[in-house]
Length: 433
Image (tube, rainbow, N blue to C red):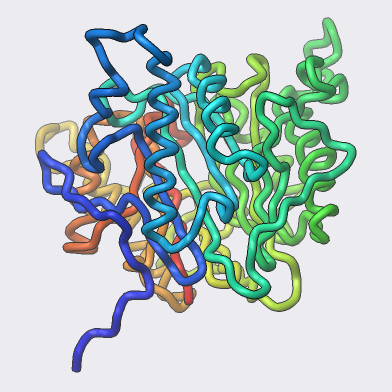
């Protein structure tokens, strides 16, 4: 009997050399198109385009950063076309930059390309990206429009956006609601809102990350959700960006107060310092919600899925036809799993990163099975590495798990992870038809 066709179709797949990594520039999964880790490449799988770098005439014409943004958006159009959708059907974009100087030229090109349709967005600064000369990376989700399923902008009247960005704070596609990354900023030009700041000259009148998180959740997320007909209990996925290791535990106190009962899948991502458009901000949060009613919402926790990265987090949430996993670390009750701990008596035997990845992918496969899908249906892989020297060994484990499968994978270098010895965190999205 012939094998059933995969419900996930790689778009513009390439083999990346050296190393032979099978990479999917995008994927089509039912009514969704994903692009993960778009770079300014003229040829997918190669380095940054020569016309972007242009070392012989670096100041002849547009700046390097504007040329880089132009190429990224050109590649975005190629993925959308290959997936049977258009730029006007994008529902979310996220950006990683290695420098704040990239943001303004990127926004200039975004407005020129996307016009009035600028979807919810999250921008953060990171230490390094994979390619030499790379300063911008983009991640995208688009809808394939059909009756009852097309992007709809949600713009709360009392929430202003600076003219240089002009994106929508939220956007709905069917019952899925995508909410932009939000910080605890007040009026435009004000910086952090007064309610989110520590009182002047007080050392123990609040915790900065708690004040900011409370403000983001109760003043920003709640308003966007309300405009979309949702509440905090309808959130199915949070991505939370934090710049300080000491902020993880205080943020989780806030998480338990607001989300301990509803248990959205949650990933905490370290950023550079500073990491956001407000230099003194500690946190940014984006969200996906599922309007109650027609689409299935199911919290997934199974014995083989491993210990959650943080107490109380679910392993995953199924939201309609998307399975959204919480950030994954190769840990158990003792910290880093034993198989990944280097042996001090045999320091050059074994590979910690390969052991971590094997544990993570085995667990992810069991979580997928419990949700009625398979890891082979993965549509977005985001790897957060503390050391890019481990990127290729990590990819080898993926290729052993899913041989011959082009992977929709990106990697970002982060300054730390919250468990000693852990050097990679996975954030996975899987199609669950």
